[in-house]
Amino acid sequence: MRHLLLITAFLAMLGPTSAHAEGSESIWDGLQVHGFASQAAIWTSDNRFFGNSPETSFAFTEIGLNASLPINPRILLSGQLLARRAGDMYDGTPELDYGLADITLASSNEQRWGVRVGRVKNPLGIYNETRDVPFTRPGIFLPQVIYYDKIRNLALSTDGLMFYGESYIDQGALSLTLGGGQPVIDDNVGWTFLRNNYDGEFQTDNKTGLVQLWYSTPGERFKFGLSGIMLSLRFDPGQHSPLRSGTTDIFYWIASIQYDTEDWTLSAEYLREPLAWGDYGPFFPNFKTTVEGYYLQGTYRIRPNIELLMRYEEGFANRNDRDGVRFSTRTGGLFPPFAGFSKIWTAGLRWDINRQWMVRAEYQRHHGTFVLSFRENPDLGQLREYWNLFAVQAAFRF
Amino acid sequence: MDSFSSSSKSNHWRRPPAIRQQSAKPLSTAFIGLVLVLWPWRLTAQELIVNESVHNARISQNEARLFFTMRLPLWENNLPVKVFVLPDDHPLHRQFAKNVLGLFPYQLRQVWDRQIFSGTGQAPITVATEQEMIKRVASTPGGIGYVESAPAYSQVRTLEVR
Image (cartoon, rainbow over all chains, first blue to last red; front, side, top):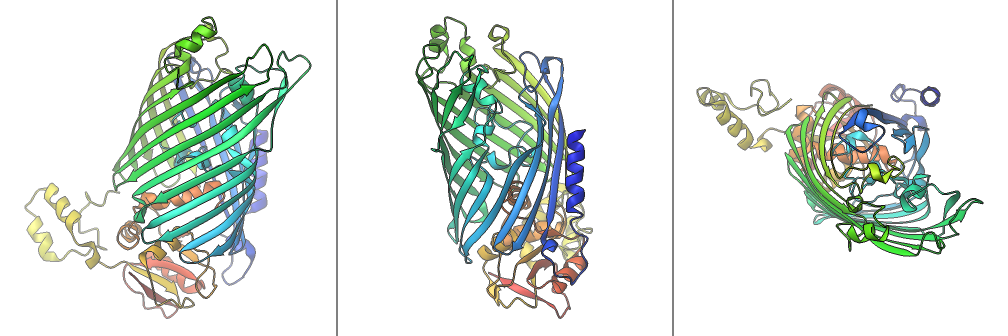
């Protein structure tokens, strides 16, 4: 309720978007306000996913409100508040999703160069920048083997700078983004990278860098992308922590390809994420692994407002131990082998009822539990290897 | 919603000649669909229009795409670009996107949504009707939009795309 009030107050402050008298030249004429809200219901046969899903969870709610204002043709100010409730992982407290100044440094009819300053969404893969906007996703859930929801904030946004260059010629469009700064992190980092919520805090070293490269053919039929982020986390242990002050080095990169026709969109992405833990002390020995994930996805528009989704994805905690057996043995069986991978079939249906409303239904067949959050499933003995998911979602936008 | 399954009569923007309609009458709906699919759209005009303040004589298709995907902030004479569009499901919008820009309407929507919801750009201004489109482009310096056929407004002119 408090969140709702806050958002209403924000909206009231900004005023209506289009009530401007003709002829009066004011910078507020360019103000745009957009927003979205969604609510899902999730049921799983076993294992907790976005809340207490075995008994039907409603704990997946997204509310976003943004405003953008061009203070001149070269400078755009924008910001978005996001309230996101996602099971035990996120409680719905509104946060600044992005808040930035986008400055065009130079532009012609073939090129554009600029910089974004502030909190900027990381342009990783096809979907990361707008991953919390249901209308921009192919399904209720993004492919979890690449766009993890168990730890989304690490790759979500950066407080810093992003330089971009875009070139549009008759042979296609090329764009490059280079960024650096401080990633936005939260409790889920500890749960995912240390598999527990130890007493202490994660901080980032000033070693965060991001690069993104896209090429698209004329008419954007084919798109090819490469994007990656490199960061280093330092754990500052609290008094009661059994762990020492260790570091976790992360390199997360995605290769993407997308093909558009009038009725079909085919997408495939491949993720590799080398991880290294060091200096955490005897209770958490130094360890290296390479996470891997990929999916192949097709969406088919039966009509312009009805879309079918089919996807297959696989993800592995360690690409050199894809069946999870080695890690399971190392932990004395505490970790079941199937916690080291996920193989998921997804079928979904989307219906855009009108310009504001959209509803969706989705079914997933899971083998393995790699994509699940330890925070939501702390008791490893309770995990089930094969499980089903069914979800529906309603979403509104303006 | 689906332009291919609705009758050609209601799709007045396409203006198929009467002879085509008569010959299609006894045939199956599948054949009508095929005729519509194969019909040379370019015979039916969608014209790009600009406010009189814009001095360009013509623009390339590449440039037209950049204007409508909100990637070009300024005209050559440094006037800010103001883009007007019809709703996504408007038949004229869909024809203009496909025939003039060479983009599918859902691709335009994806580009705009990415910009709107990542704070890296803005959406074009959506107007409800073709009449409103002409009025807004006429009254907005730097305005750009599209119509079915060239309007008789002195403040608006068509711009050749090639």
